[in-house]
Image (cartoon, rainbow, N blue to C red; front, side):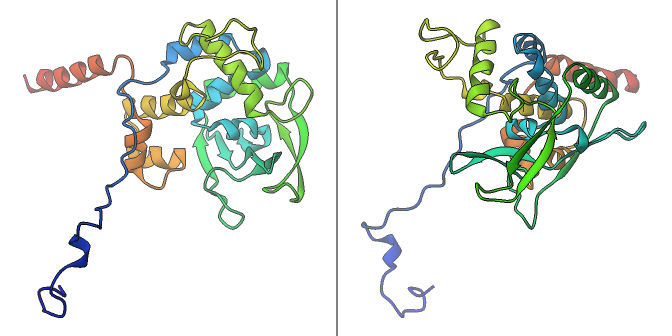
Length: 265
């Protein structure tokens, strides 16, 4: 506009020394789910008993890893007809110390709690887990290393009755992925600090959250509701990053179109 109105003779933004900023492009999501429902069934069986139900918290409730670590039976409304899980907490690190914190994106003033419906079959599975492995009270600081101490009854503590550490759990997860043939180890050391596996970032616990999103879309849940259940402010992000094609989806599309033709006949 300044050039058009003659206050300056040339546009300084078009000189050779000025480079146009290229928009950042995120990596495209895979078309198919990183882990299928059947693979997660297999993987579940290769985790220690005390952690198997975490698979169902991921694929059945859309929880992030830290939210599973911080999950408490007290976060569940066990009402007969309206069972709901309040996702209000995660376990994360602050300056090398495990702390309780709000879900991702939450703050002290705006914790970003969300509510997810709980299916009866999944509720039964969680009750069975609690009968066999009772919850344990764990005390951690809130939000910061020096924050107020908070005690929570955790659904998935360690054998030592402590909060789970993601570094430890990720070894168990990768070993289970290897056991079902999804990834391979790159050395022959036993599972533990010395064992290494091929890169598998897309198949870590977050893949359960993607499976939850993909199955929900496949079953007809609208993207706005799904974004709320996942804690996303932008439904487009949910579609772009979390939704993949699930098994039988193509056949389901064929049946849907065929149904329309049969109704028109």
